[in-house]
Image (cartoon, rainbow, N blue to C red; front, side, top):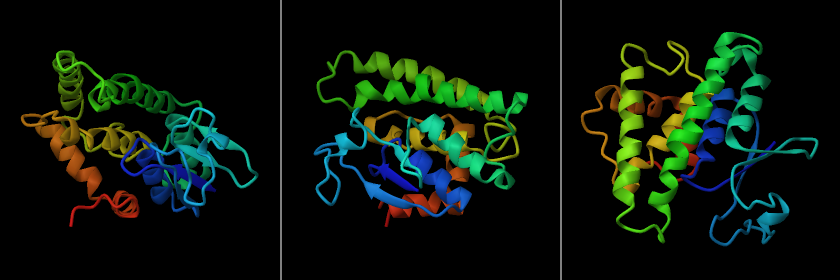
Length: 203
């Protein structure tokens, strides 16, 4: 398998999932600025939409969209319990979390990263994002991970999006459960390996 990623982007989530799964893969940097691969290949020939992540399977087929990719990865190694079994309510809980993170957390960061976003609009974005993070903080009270005691691919995704807070000035102070959660997930060997591979570990 090949994972096309950009350091620190949402592709960190499947990067984490691959390390947690222990699956062999090749990681290929796809610049979000030049849209070129290290060998000069136009990334638009890999993903016409131009963004990461993309997971290329051994048979040449490609999967786009992080939520689909991380579930595919999890299902390759069911013994690792990175996702509950298909057809169970717990699996739908996982999908519920992946959807929430994607639509309510991930997409909310977009205007904060875009240079052209009007300055007067950003406080509104931060306020709404803050409300979602406050709710998340309450959801994590008394449990180590989103699904309870078991780490799942949803945790890798939430960890990825929370890691952007410092870059855009979103303050997590006072959100004690969320801060403890971020530290807990960040300490996992699989997460550390992905961070190191992307050059994101602070020296």
